[in-house]
Length: 94
Image: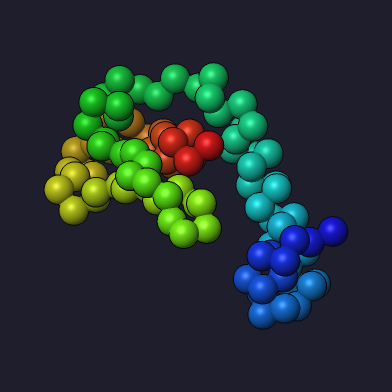
């Protein structure tokens, strides 16, 4: 069953909405999102990636701030993996 937001996200096409939902659930499973709070990010990432929730929008969804403009991504990727960065953002949102 698809929620209204999933249906409207795919131009009211319930087949496309169901596909999107299934892909999202698979991504969550593949990345271990349901257990992400027990994951400890590398210290280098926590110290150098200023990520956080800055508030909530009118619908109550979190507004996440990840200021990449001043971040030395190339340098950071010598200390952590791309997957570590994705996991930290996912952990923050969860």
